[in-house]
Structures are given as structure tokens and as C-alpha cells.
Image 1 (cartoon, rainbow, N blue to C red):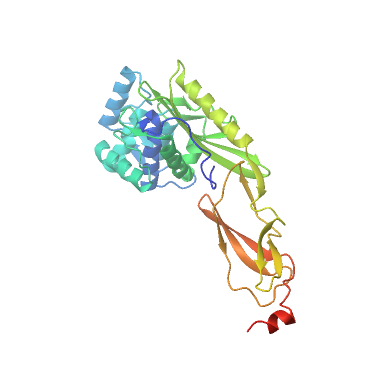
Image 2: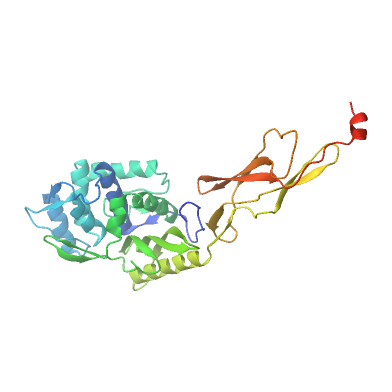
Length: 338
């Protein structure tokens, strides 16, 4: 859950082939190196001999490719659309060579970027995912998905159900779950080595607040791996949202502590008002208490300190206040103490 943390995981944590989800990294690097603003199509990229060869080879071996012809040029946005929507392996070659001069140099960028993003269980051996040596884990892919979806052009492309390119014509997104159960992207992938794979993002409104979850399902091996992986992702998204609710970070008026004076007087410390958080049952938030020097007079509402709650990398401050007056020491107590 974005801004909160992990809801958990199940299955192996070992790196496995990820098929065309590899193209998420390819697109992410291209957009980092060549950003596109709203409505900007980017420069024209000529179809190279290597791209044409990748198309012809892919066509002959029933790979996922986008039709290209000699002498054709695609704008950056068109090439990215062809990469992410119909998952063109040949357009991964086109973009990699355009960005880094060669696929070898681009693969080095992919692995360097993985390290920068903290994807410790991820390694790339190609730019499209056709090679089973491109591997990752669900946890790493979720982090990659969050980074990619922070790029407006990327998130806009993967939300499209179809695209029309100059030579290839109308192309359909393999993410058939788009628009179902709040799913707004990101990328599917499937082949014999990887099975069915899906890195997804879903959005839903919980108690008037938009909540975003990012998830990954890998290694679905059935007679219809894409259907299996999409169904699994929808089930995960529905289960995640069903368990979410918005509650106060700290229960208001609950006694959260006490001030006890040496002379025996005591007063409860409470949280009169608390910010709300959206989460799920069992979610824990590490808390740190900050209390400075107490004032000489404590009356109802006196600020006593702050609870610093940690949630998904952000900090929430909750003010603690005295619920009543702290009585001073009696005369006898004063007289019998030096």
C-alpha cells in the first residue's frame, strides 16, 4: 500500500524469470534519460537494421513484436507505447540502442539502475525479458513499479487499453484487467521459463480517501497463464482493499500515560485529537515519545509531548496533553523535604 507499507507476501523469495516485466525497467531508464512532458511526443527514432532483424526473428518464432519496416521512424512516445502496450520485443531493441548506443551498454544501465533503486535480487541479461536470465522477485518488482508509476508518461501509457501506430496499426494491451477492480496498469509477461507474470497497480476510494496498492504475481503455470495471473492479481487487489479502513492513529481520549509527581499527585495524559490513517487490522506503527521539560504548572490541555509515529517512511506527530490539573505539593510535604 503506497505511503503505508507491505501487506505481506507468499511463496518463494528467490529470484525467478520475469519475462516482459523486464520492459518496465527499459521504459523507466528511457524516460529518465529522455523525459517527456505532457503532450510531447519526443524525437523521431529511425528503425535500425538490428530492430528490423529483431522484428523478423520475433515474427518467425512467434514472439511478441510490433510491425516495423525499413525506413520507418517512430517518435519516442510511439516507441514506448509499442514497448509497453503490445509488448514489442523489437521496440525494446530500438529504444535501447537509441538510448545507449547498443543493447549491451543499455543492459549495464539496467543493472546499475537496479542497484540504485535497491533491487538487490534483480539482474538483467537482456532488454525485453525474452532471456530467462533476466530475473527478479515480487518485492523488488513492486519497488520498480512504484518508481516507474511516478513517471507521468509511463503511468499514462500503461493505463491505455490500445494504441494505433503508423505502420503496425491498432494494437491491444495484454493487460486485460485494466479498468477491473481498480487496476490501472502496469505490465504483464509470460513465456515458458517465467510462466504468467503481472506487476500491477490498483486504486480505490476508502472512506473518501484514494488508496493505491502495488502488487506482483509471478510464476503462474497453467494452460492459460495470462488469465491465471490476471485473475490472481484481481483477487489480491480485492482482498487488500476489503481489509482496509480509516481510523484515528491514536484513539482519542484514551489514557496514553500519566504524570506522577514526587508528592503523589497524578494526572492522565491523553490525545484529544488524532489524525486518521488508512490501513488494515494488525498494522503496527513504530512510535517514539518526545517529552521536553515540563512546565511548572500543569493545567487541563497543557502540551506534555509528542508521539512520533512512523508509517511508510513518513512521520505523523500526535500531540499529548494533560487531561486535568496537576495538584501542587502540600505544605507538610514541603516542610518535610529539604
